[in-house]
Image (cartoon, rainbow, N blue to C red; front, side, top):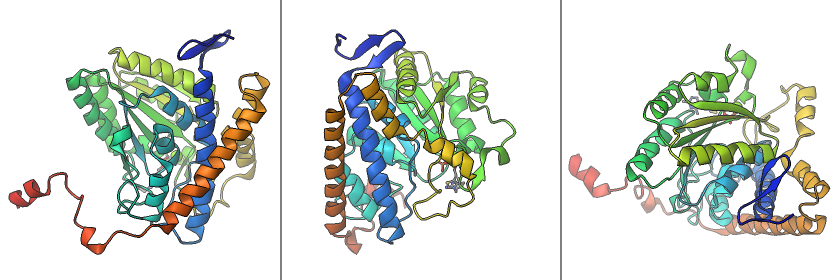
Length: 341
Ligand SMILES: Cc1ncc(C[n+]2csc(CCOP(=O)(O)OP(=O)(O)O)c2C)c(N)n1
Ligand SMILES: [Mg+2]
């Protein structure tokens, strides 16, 4: 197979380049490992605040990281580990923030819900369900005014589709044809409530289309299907086509938080979802397709294991911020705010 600069073509459709496939695997393995380590640390009471596992969503995160350019902006939620790893936030800064230490992306004052790093376009993460959509619409207006072809992506859960801010963000983005990519990570749970118990209209893509934008449903356990849908969407948005909504069907493979009970999950449903665990399935597929050799994948796994171990050792060893830092970094321009008071 001859590889062009960015993509290789197959009979089934376009494919990521081999370099992108390898990076996607690295993102998936790193996220899976860091996630399980963070859960252990949460259970041991060592993190600054609650940790929200992302197990089950690794394929969507990895594909998103492969299609976005560094200048594109991403807005995520509290369940953000896969998104921030994929967008290129340094692992040590992520983990130091989980522990609430000075070398974290938010200088240890944000904790697991606040892993933003605008230098790599990881513009915001928020703990307020649904609040990312109007933030993304606002960033979309900025990108539209700049006219530089930047795309703004926003990830959110299935439960967020029942919140007012969701409607407001989607409506304005469609009305003003903003360059926003809406990514619904449907893991079929909103905290401890299953999807069927909180909405009579679970076809999120259908609902999104009614706002006046292109919308479709994608198998979120499949990294290639995810990559294809995301690539197409980003291309359409970048060329001025207005917002796109993609619903990724996945499943939450763990409890709501790193310490939460998950005994209420229907066992057969979880077992079925576990057979689709993204990273191991991608490994098998890459080998079966002859795209990446087993030895190369072993090396990527070892690299990810070392990076995760190193990041956790680093984070845990760093100091917490001083109390005199409490009022720093609260407002972009502190003087302006003080003058207004
Ligand atoms: C405005 C608001 N309401 C309620 C909560 C409490 N809460 C935290 S996570 C969550 C569930 C959200 O479910 P979903 O959007 O599917 O995201 P998931 O946690 O499954 O990724 C809720 C209700 C919150 N953080 N913000
Ligand atoms: Mg959910």
